[in-house]
Image (cartoon, rainbow, N blue to C red; front, side, top):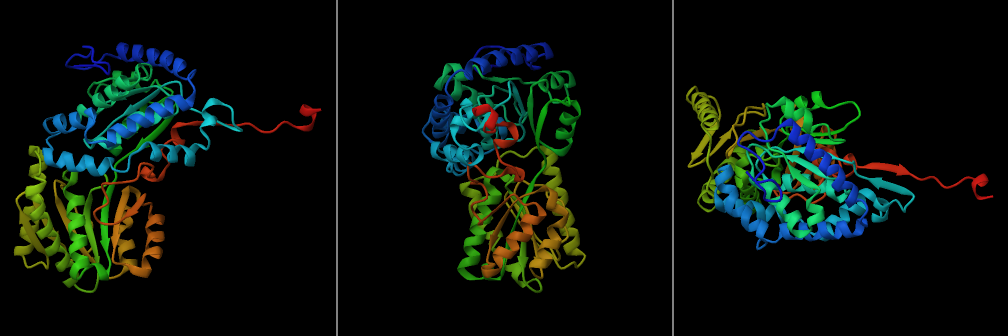
Length: 443
């Protein structure tokens, strides 16, 4: 296995705790050198890197499209489309806007402003999942603060971290020395303890895995965690008829199909406002048609046996309810499933393009239905609410939703969106306020 500069360094079982400690020490030295460079210089380099990740013809995007399907099981067309939509909001200008909104003037990073900003001496990030954009962003964000990074790749995506490290190292060798990779099984507690010896730790993953990291972190360490999240969609009355319905269904089918519904921005359910089941039936029919058409253009990828078993179980359970006379509807195609439920009760989602359509009476009923999901809601796609949308948006924000968007845009979040309701850089930065001198200091 290769480390971030292409050297043979990691054995099949990954690094040892001692090797991780050596990497942290090396990063501490590299970070000290980096902080002697003007912040503007480092930010300009990172801006070029962000632009190259947006460019589908860059070597990193071409390598991602080439290598990710085999490593993760995603189909190649899906990776091409998912990367196009996921990186389309990325640019040097977007990065500069993020820095301005969260940190103020870049001079703050050089300690020449009234508010001084710095990164930590060392920064570790525990990556999760197999959608590449969060991995890229989690690895380069600390570098914006000139904080060196030690990244533990997700077991489901060994490709993206390697490509990020290469994109940094080959753009600027000195900055490349500030980014290292440490691969080891998540069950290796000795390596995990060594990893969290960094001054700041970002943990991504399931609630259980994040809790495991939290238990190892020392009291003096800054811990930033991103746990389990889900997303849904909600359609008001004007989005359940005619062309508006067709557009919403096409957009939601794309949101569901991209990354095979395995990302936190993939909707697992669609809530339809309206009395009875007619509106929900129309939405389920249109969504099934759209998923069926999309299956040939963006074929579903590999499904592991355990995931396939969960899908089979949920399909069989729906078929049993249907046979028993329950008022539900079931649409099954090649690699996708739509269940039109009879109420808004939250049910399990096996993912891999399995979506439930729930009827709800009104906006108040929608908020009640989403209440149990509130602590875990990432995004909600909204359409068809007209003048009621602002009030509904306020209610969803109060539940804890991080992002509201249109159907079809769920997998294209802005570069600076508030993941888990928090800024990107502020949680991993240190701020020092320099107060003006008093009268006695100027006399």
